[in-house]
Structure formats: C-alpha cells, structure tokens
Image 1 (cartoon, one colour):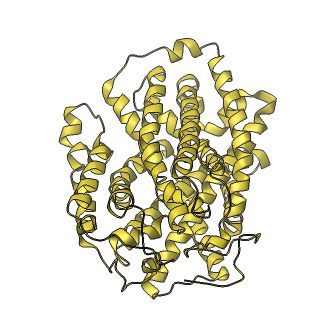
Image 2 (cartoon, helix red, strand yellow):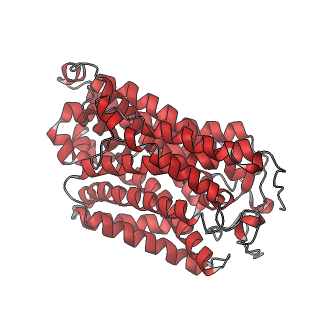
Image 3 (tube, one colour):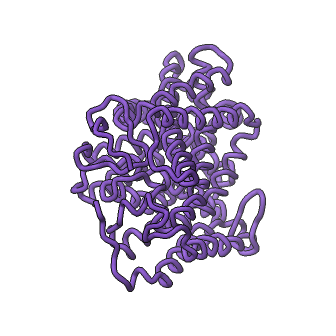
Length: 464
C-alpha cells in the first residue's frame, strides 16, 4: 500500500484510491452520511423508478406503501455496510477479497462496475435532459457537459462530494416537497390517485423494485464512510445512512408514482419538462435541482467505478499503488464509457431501466449477504487489512465456498424471478409477485456462514 507522506486529510484534491486510510487522515462526523445518501436518492432517477410502480399496475395510492416498505427493507440491509468504512478504512468492494479471495473478488468487482456504469448512464440521460432545457441545447450535448461536471467532482474526490451533497440535500428536499404539494393540489389528483384497487402481485413487485434500488447501493456505501475515525459509533454510521437513503428515496419515488398517475403521457414523454412545467415560471428551479441531484449520484458512480476498475487492474497487474495521474485517467475512462451508453439509450428508457434494476437485484443480493455475514457473524469486524492487498495472504487467491454460496444464491432465485427475459414458474403461479431477492439473500448468507470454517476457528487480527 502507498505510504506517501504527502497524502493527508487536509488536501483539496483527494489522492487516495483503493488504499487504506490511516488514522492521521481520518476526519468528519457520521451525520454527514445523511446528506450524501439523501442527495443521492432524491434524484430524477429515483423519481422515474417511482413512476414504474404505476406503470407496472399498482394503483397510485397503494404505490406509496410499497415504496416505503421496499426502501425500509432494502435500506436496512444496505446501511449495514456503512459500519465497514470506519472500521476497515478501505473501499467497499476491495473488502470482497476477504470473502472471495484476492483474485476471486474480481467477479463482484465486475458486477459492481456494471452497476456503476448503468446508474451513471441513466443519470446522464436524465441529467442531460435537464441541462439541455436549461442551456437550450440538445440533450446529448447536455449529457456531455454533465459528464464533464461529474468527472471533475469525482477527481477532486471525497471531501467535495460530501460538501456538494449538503447543498443538494437542502435544494432537493425543498423543491421535491413543493412538487409533492403541487401534484396533490391538481384538479384531477384526488380522483386519479384514489382510483384503482389493491393488487397483490404488482404490490409485491413494487416492494422488490424499491428494495432493489436500495440494495444496488451496496457496493457504494463504505466508500463514503471510510474516512471517518475508527471510533465512530456503529449505530450512528448505520443510522444516518439508513435515514438519509430511505427518506430520500421514499420522497422521490412517491412523487414519481403520483406524477405518473396524474401526468400520464406528458410525464412519460419527458419527465424533467413535465415537472418543470408544474412550477410555471419557476420551472428552471426544477431543472437545476435535477442537475445538482444527478451530479451527486453520477459522481458516486464515477468515483466507485474508477475504484472498482483500479482494483481489478491492480490485482491482475500485481500492483497496489495507483498514482494521482492514473486515478484521473480511470475516472475519465468510466465517464467516457457511461456517456457512450447514454448516447445509445433507446426511447424505451423506463422499460429498460426496470429490467436493469431487477436484473442487478438477482446478482447483488448474494454478494451483499456474503459480505455482511462475513463482517458481522464470522470475523466479528476483525480483519487483516494488509492481507487484502496480498495475493499470498490468509484470504487466499480464490475462496471456493464464497463462489458456491454466491451462485447458489443466484440459482435458487430462478423459479422466483420475474423479468422481461424470464418469468419463473413460482413467480408465474403467484401472478408475477417478485420475492427472489429475499430467497437469494437468505440462501447465500446461510451457506457462507454454516459451512465456513472461520466461524469455528481463530479470528483474523488486524495488523494495522
């Protein structure tokens, strides 16, 4: 690991990448995590996700309970990752080396990279619409400008990501609440929102969709708590992450569901323009809010994406040090790929995004279960940090048990799956109700715990 004496907490531009954060560079308070995760979740992408609840067949009124339940369930699992940051002081995904092995961790790293790129690309599409309307330019030009902003903020790094999140939280919180009241005050709102009956299958599918939204943040979480002092209370770290993420996503998704019901085709055609139109002459404020909110979300994806890419490359090249110049290059590469994907986005954006979320859910929950079981139940938060960077260390090159647990968690979900590509027999039997993610979470976690010799042997000790 790099021990460059010039790297310290007070630098304006972050130089750390995948390496361990020493105590002298630890800083901040856990309350700042509320702002990061509220800002990341009160985005136009979350709002579009909320609209899917209505599109999938939920009544507007019953969409909101499904949104809240799913966010609470998924948010609690995801927030548990937050305590790993202060305790271990390394990025979220590099921790996977302790479960999957030094080279085995490349699998979840590639999975995480797809998540980062997917959310980054969708954010560029929607952020490009908002910036395009503000600057009166083509949305693809707006997306390109937006990608530059996200790239610069990701290069500057951790401190400024937290600072921008504070501003974005206040702005999006106020504007989204105003939009909520404007939608509810619309003449047709009462009749539209109250229409439709409760339907179990789309209600459960809606819960899974919002849980998916939360769970796909799993690979991000510890990246933004790893600079906190190791003495930071676990309850505070988890609590602030959970509160910001669940409140932010529930607010944004609820507005999306209501806007889709009330706005209909006008909302589906261009979500940003529809929402801006609700505030009349002040519509530009909505566009600015979308831009700032998506700037936070896209930066998180760019930031996490470059660390995943760097971890993969350094593992294959047997190097532990990433220079400041290489760090910037990795960020630019991630942004360029995401923009290329966004530029090729089809008109069926909502449908494709739904498929993307549900697809990721099948693969991310087994990883999350293995990671959390290892941290809380097997190693009891005690790790050899130096060994995470050593292919010949105690965590090994590849851990077969982790792969067995991981793929078992995926395979067991197949009968319960409900996606555009495949509907499992059990999901079909229950009218499309989606519970696969719960099954995968339980099975992977159980296998990794029950058959793990480490839970019966001596615990690893930190050498740092």
